[in-house]
Image 1 (cartoon, helix red, strand yellow):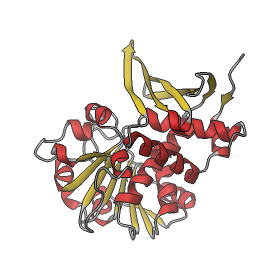
Image 2 (image 1 turned 90 degrees about the horizontal axis):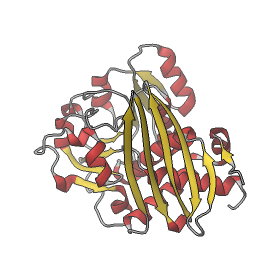
Image 3 (image 1 turned 120 degrees about the horizontal axis):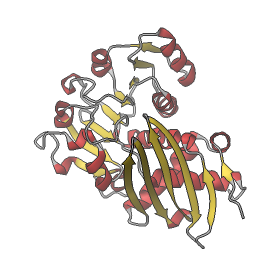
Amino acid sequence: MSLPHITDELVEAAVSAADAREALADAFLRFGREEASMQARIRSEAGGVKLSTLGAVIPGQEVVGAKVYTTIKGQFSFIILLFSSVDGRALATFDAGAITRLRTAGCSVISAQRLARPEASTLAVFGSGPLGRAHAVQMAEAFPLKRVLLVSRSSDPALAAELEAACGIPTRLATAEQAAAEADMIVTASRAPTALFSGDLLKPGCFIAAVGSSLPNTRELDDRAMARASLVTVEWREQSLREAGDLVLADPAALTSDKIVELGEILAGKARGRTSNDEIIIYKSVGVGLQDIALAGLAYRRIVGLD
């Protein structure tokens, strides 16, 4: 029997950003309670072609599965294979573009709702691609934003106009220095190999979601940002400490191990969140299998009519 294949278009029609955040928060809560597990990303490469896999087991959501993707000349092609954790049946295959956009921005918002100042009004977005746009849209839903500062390698004002249309918040282009100094919340969704700004510029109380790099030899944040942060939240220590250049390349004196906590630990009440208005807090994302499988399960239930 052939498996149904669920396209990005079907996922986008069936799953809202708010729905995605609910499923993701539940999955990370279960992981924080040790009721779910993950497979770390494995990368294999030959002849310039890279194959990567990662996955998760979430019995409480009745799903288990893996995401598999290729990387060729910097371009990604994803597929997710979903199984039932009840009887082991293969349920469906998925495109993963829509799920990736939903889950990355969704977890940044989940983190921000617990770690950013609720009155945050200025968002800075570094990166004008789909990931930056998805973050601006979801952050605008969750916070009383008054303006968005866009930092892009291109100085085309049309980029700011497009982002403003997408998120419904007044948006203008800014330099990296202006954005870092003025923002209450920052999203770094770039492919920059080195730090985007000096951490000395950050406002007290700033929240940063660093989501652009998942390679150990690249970083978006410098040692001053790490040193000034009181907390650095990650999806999963095991994978983050191996993949995240922001952590791997940091001076150990700037990023002490006691600063690093998992999102699931915060959701489960095992680790503290923000305790003062002046704290600078970082959420560092590399993307983990738990996110993909939780959203694939949600999309499957919606599309086949189980929810």
